[in-house]
Image 1 (tube, rainbow, N blue to C red):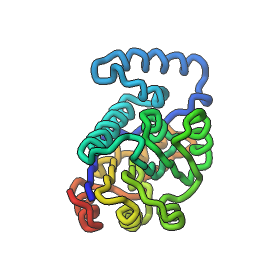
Image 2: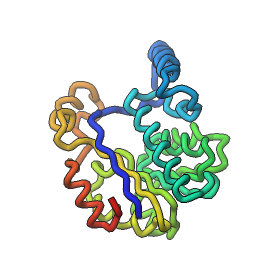
Image 3: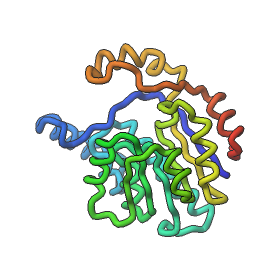
Length: 229
């Protein structure tokens, strides 16, 4: 099985459009419009699914789409032939963007509000579904198999990431792609995340990350599961 993983340094919060005051929403729309005129973001309509988020999220979305597109080219597949699981999908930014390109996507998350928003944003798409479910339990109970499993900024929230990765490995069709993004566990943001949360996230003052990965530990864990690096 192919493995791709990426280290990130940022700590960010996704924003729900309906929770913003009108002035802030207008400012974000202006920023997004300017950002998508830049060469790196230009002519990519799927970025509309990440309008209310950060520059780093846009960069991650570009990278995820690039890796998925490279995978289907390598495997000589059409987009409509490819099934994707977005584990811990949150508001469904990645899932909806990939669905807009023609992929069949299933998004699962234990966060009910996130799934509600994801469903609302994905209205009109026939090829994306969202469900409130824990990712490992969903894979075990459904028995479904996927060409690609996404675990994007998710493993650091899990109490047993190794067990989830083993389950994801078994759920992938061969040759499948397991695409992972984790924050730098030794980066300044992670090391000072709790003070950051206390200052900027009054409603959730504790660092939600219960795992810290280094480049070495994430690589060893995923290779031990069985993925080809």
